[in-house]
Amino acid sequence: MKNNIILSWIEEGVVSIPSFLFSEYKSIGLTDLECMLILQLHAFMEKGNSFPTLEELSNRMTLSLEQCSQTLGSLLTRGYLEILKGHTDQGIYFEKYSLQPLWKKLINHQLLVEKEQTEQQLKLEEG
Amino acid sequence: MKNNIILSWIEEGVVSIPSFLFSEYKSIGLTDLECMLILQLHAFMEKGNSFPTLEELSNRMTLSLEQCSQTLGSLLTRGYLEILKGHTDQGIYFEKYSLQPLWKKLINHQLLVEKEQTEQQLKLEEG
Amino acid sequence: MKNNIILSWIEEGVVSIPSFLFSEYKSIGLTDLECMLILQLHAFMEKGNSFPTLEELSNRMTLSLEQCSQTLGSLLTRGYLEILKGHTDQGIYFEKYSLQPLWKKLINHQLLVEKEQTEQQLKLEEG
Amino acid sequence: MKNNIILSWIEEGVVSIPSFLFSEYKSIGLTDLECMLILQLHAFMEKGNSFPTLEELSNRMTLSLEQCSQTLGSLLTRGYLEILKGHTDQGIYFEKYSLQPLWKKLINHQLLVEKEQTEQQLKLEEG
Image (cartoon, rainbow over all chains, first blue to last red; front, side):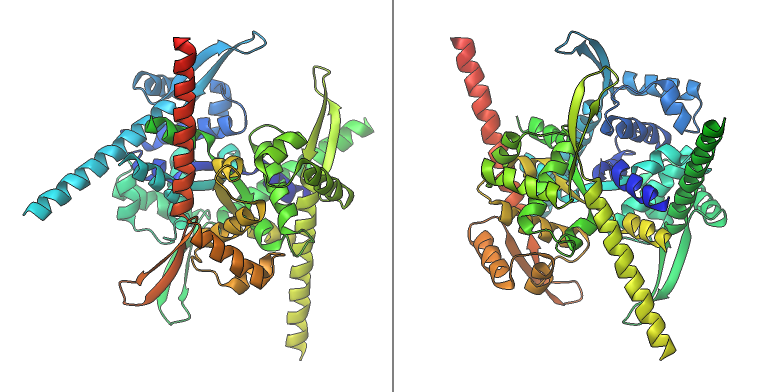
């Protein structure tokens, strides 16, 4: 029986998250709970489910269904998340979440940090 | 400048978290916030810092220093986390966090789930 | 333009491979080239393509199409890999690779190593 | 006994490799064997050993110690790898491998691919 468990651990695998998200989510304006919800979305998306329902999300979280709904709405409004809509090659309508807006915010944040560091260093050198 | 950012993304890399933690943390009794704190601990540990201070943790989180302290204390008391103490080969004293208790809880949870599934199937077969 | 590249790096993401595979593939009888082919398979499978063609594999590798074919054949015969066949819920026939046989070999190898270590320690204690 | 194995799998964890390396190493001039050696280096580096010896590398590989040495030498000469030397804050001399040259080659390759695609599209639009 236990062999099955090891196999399922290996096959379920891991969720991989850019390290910068952990160190910078607060700097780009996210709360701990909002980040946790985003990580759950990311986990579903990595496993091939790119549009988990509110039930699927809240089943795994201590946030209630209503709180999940409100938090997702807020993330969409504030531009951390977007919903893409379209048709597959077979003409089937789909909706899916995209975390591109989040990654863009993180990249812009880092460009800004790097620019400030460069300017500060120049000032130091100029005396 | 932007090349540096790509390089730092690659070199900072990712934090890898067992998928089962995302699907089962609620089942083993953790809240969303407690899990977020554990993920931050895990992120520090993966980068080689196995005993981050309360300041390091709360600097990255919207939890206050006091809330971090209380939550860590509760996780230690309830057996999701432990602190290992010892001396290195060079005789230097160290303390570090270990997530072994958490992984053990997850494994036991899955063994239980699997056992129940097997028993239920046997009942069905017996009619 | 470069922002796109950072985004595509983030979205393409990483391939995650159990550390034990790197340290133990030689011990369980694989060559460097065989392991590289398995890693390519694993990379395709993680991106949702669970039955890459010989062309897809050899396009990415310096192994020729014929060498890929021979190596895959040998891995199947020697029990490191298997092909699962079936029908989807919609009745569509599919074939896909499974790395379960490989993971089982790795697990058994580690169980053996651990057993030998325990026995050796017992002998030492008995004097 | 088996619980230990699950725990050690979890704690050993995974090696995370940018997906682009798998799809593009051939395009940037690496052979399958050279890439396998680089992956082994990367695996050691992720576990905190940033200057594995030839013995440590060849112990895990079917490449002989001499072949490892030759391949590493060739990767250094051809600019896929470099050795950084320095002193720690405590004044201890160190040498370590860096894969920055490899990541730079990958980034430049992708910038080129993207540029060609943009130009081709412009031509198509101009007729």
